Length: 292
Length: 332
Image (cartoon, rainbow over all chains, first blue to last red; front, side, top):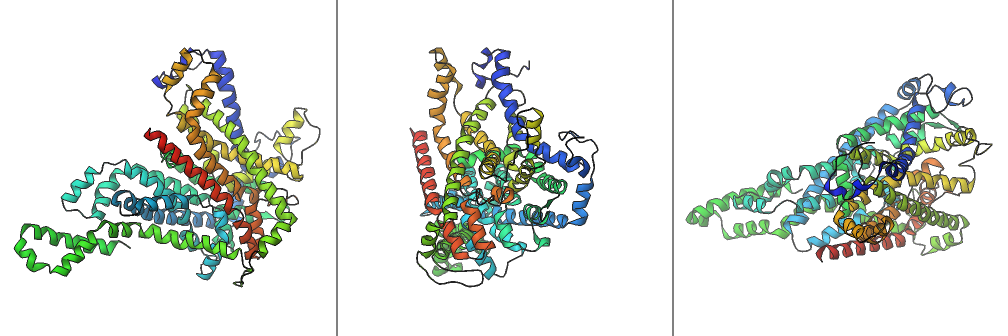
């Protein structure tokens, strides 16, 4: 079988024999992986199947694509507003992520490094804000968005998304800033640097991994956001990918599964690509936020 | 906006720098009130407030204010277009008698309890598997987290298709294997629909539980296991008496988050069933959306959302005390 390199952290696991490993490790792991990956496989094959094959399980094996086609993808780009949903989602995501990162970097620095009176309570308040779910905020936010005249505008989303991004990013960055030795900042202070100069030229360059983690997480959270986009946006050309796919691609009782799966597949690509490049950062932000 | 003040502070500091070098010049260059202002700007309290102002202002106007507005809307008869007037607890009184609301409370509790009860053992099991000696460990870990990373709504659409009544691949496979003789109506029957959405929720939640618990497992020193093994402990005893107690603090935190996300779930239900059939899969969040936004009764919808608050507070308290206990342990 496979010979993985032995590490001290593996402890006494080398005592296990291959048949036992096969039964207690590879088999259950394989089953769970199949369960976790099957929906992606099904999504992908459906995207490339022609309709004739899609609804005929007698002549074609549904697990395989006999005649791959791009018709669902081209239909998505020519017959629907899919390209503009994609662009909207990208603009909203980038805007909201940028605003959240700037606000969170300043906020986290203020709480962690300036240690003014009450800063620990501010830190706690930010953690609590992180626990408020969008499901109880969307109704009052809808009235606020309406009163601001931002209803059916993507700007509403750019403004609202930071409400769940800032608490998370700030919480993560507070932990990250804490790991940077403050002696470096003292040196800069003695050399006459202002707090903003210290943040920009000393602390931030050292905190780049933390900022990337926060940025990746903020990007995926806003790309995936649904309930606010569903509530605040009504016209098709302003919708985001998740909302557009659910509301615009279903005509009455006729479901175009090929088109829906193509929309789902293409809508997942940006986050999956970003995730695959920065997977370590993503995992560290996911676990780091819980550890702090 | 901290920028202009910071710039002014920089200017004042350069004045201070020259003042340090030439005290006589400084005395003439900066009059007393100017020095007082300078000291004010360098105070930590003021600087701290300036730094947290962008985040603070945003959260106060778009999180704290809406939260209190939501509580207020719950005791009014507001509709879309009218601000509504105070009606006391009338919304809650009518909800308690509303058979749909009663069913939805049951659905939400059932969904949360069952999904969590499946997610945690499965997630912990997967974490334990991934913590063993494995080739391509980091690749496997990256792949495991995929269901959590992709947009929930889009993967929910895939589940909708998997649970299709006529072309479900699960039914097809079971018929081929000879286990059933006709296709299962996954989303048409109340109990089938409940189990189907729970399956989709478990699929999405297991990676989160597994990866966060894996991070916890990696902090447990293997020497403890070796010591237990030398003392003759079986694998099960090592899990029960070594791994689990050390993992408990992080399990508490992860469970709080997971329960919170499941209890307030909206996306999965809205994408797969929209609450049907006959409200069998409606949760508090989806019912609140239906009454407030689709139906236009903001007050009633807000009251349903408010009904989630006591639960939310409970979850926050558990998480908070979980964190406290963890801190204590680290200190000890």
